[in-house]
Image (cartoon, rainbow, N blue to C red; front, side, top):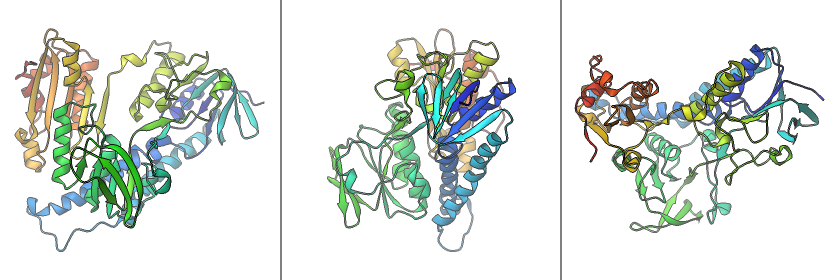
Length: 458
């Protein structure tokens, strides 16, 4: 039985970095991968989707050439096979690089196959049983397929199988009006497809404030994307033109017919076939592995990182999980999951950058607060770029002047939000930024202006 100091199951965002730190600390490490190296982000998440978003943006900007005084002869076309080839060419070096670096890492042994616990400190891969006092579970997640009548009779896509699509759908129906669904909806509309988004909630991305949801809806509808909200009793069936999705909505026709169907209704952890019961590792009702504030499971020596622990669903939270584990086990620090602040982005165009609390959460807390907002059409950099959709919103504690949160839906919002996020981590009062001199012309220069115009959140 091969014995190691540590076993890592999965090569997503947290796993390879942890392997390198453990090896550098003199540990003998085994890392297990059953499929593609690099996990969701590299293979069918951040890297490929943002490559597709970039191609879609180029097509969209080309169609707006006249707005910028640019002349293009003939209609703007999109070669979907070339778009996919570009995406694949971006993904391959990242995936291959992760694999190559692990297989060449001295002190680390790579096992390819499906890892399953056979005891609290033993994991089987094929016919080989590995043992270690510390085991790190980094198995990620996969798309959720809802219990929707008719799905077993029709063809459908998920964010994973979309990565293999090299043709333009005539009409793409997207079930799910949240982050993944909206990114695909906008990119494929810009590629030239007819797109309908179906959402059961009364508004898009319901975890966001209502004004943010409405702003996103306005942008998508302006580009010709049909939104079907309050959709109930969904069912799918075959249709001569592809697939028909039945809706029971407050208004609109009862059926939407499309050529392709994309399911974007969430993700679930890859914990069903890990043998967790053999190790005694506890999971919650949704099969997420239960961890404490330092990412340890209920079994001493077993930790869970990344999407499978239910403590974050992003590449950056997964990487932060690695940082917490490494700091606590190797550096003698005391870092916790609850030390981090909520932060994420929606990569539509314009993007939404989010950190901290929403306005609804601040109101629910009952604390005295201040708010500042600014439409992007008042931001000179956005006006000069011809990209004035969206708005910025900042929330501040009235008594301490500490930042509570921000929603930056507009040009470069996904980058600008870090200006506020860093201030929040430093517990710097907003008065410091309010007095700062920022560079003109930028979007960020208007953050101090907004903070000088804070008003009561009534």
